[in-house]
Image (cartoon, rainbow, N blue to C red; front, side, top):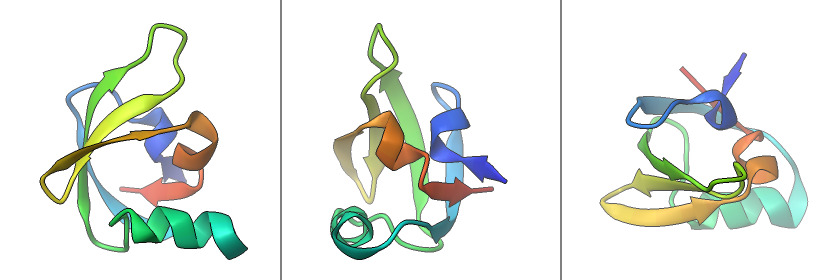
Length: 73
C-alpha cells in the first residue's frame, strides 16, 4: 500500500482510498481529497512536515500524519 507521505516531489498520484475515521477523515475529504482525484506533491518542508500539494487546482499543506491516511497509486 502506497500513501501520499511516500510520494516524491513533482510526482502526481491518484487517490485510491482515504483511511481514518470521524472528524479527521471528514476534514481531509472536505479539503477535496476524495477517491479518484489526482494530487501533485509540490514541496516538502525542511524537516519533512508539512508537505505542500496541489489538488483540484489549488495548493494545500498537509501534515505527514494526515498524508499517511491517504492511500495512492
